[in-house]
Amino acid sequence: MADAGWDEVTYLRKKAPKSSHLKSSQAVNSAMRTGAAVETSKKFTASTNKQHVITKDTAKLDRETEELHHERVSLEVGKLISQGRIEKKMTQKELATKINEKPQVINDYEAGRAIPNNQVLGKIERTLGIKLRGKDKGKPLAFGKKK
Figure (cartoon, rainbow, N blue to C red):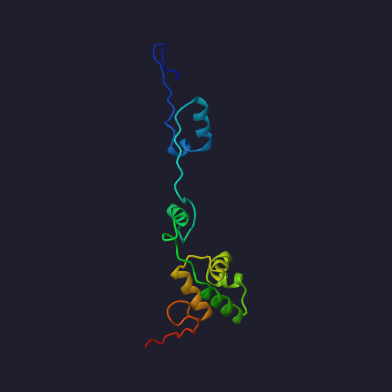
């Protein structure tokens, strides 16, 4: 700088902000204070780990007429689940832990409130060792034997 004369001018420029800085809450708040346009949008089911995704249309479908409704698990299946669980001396929470589901899921299945999911029913069948689907409901599962 020592060799710079009176006629020379040096401009210092700021770097353009990175996109991560523009998305920070501090940057959004300052943009709102200055009156700049701020666009926000939330992705549906963002940052959730949902295996059984329920779309927005299911709630609308539930409110519709009786001909447009979800089938529920029958009370017969619910009783079979609770009987099989009691025979194995398990609580609802223990069964839910074994099949990697929430205890509320087991509660809903036993009460007949759940919408049947073949993956969940299959896990329950394998854990309890009884059939919950098909024509021989309540019969023991025959592992490895196919007719």
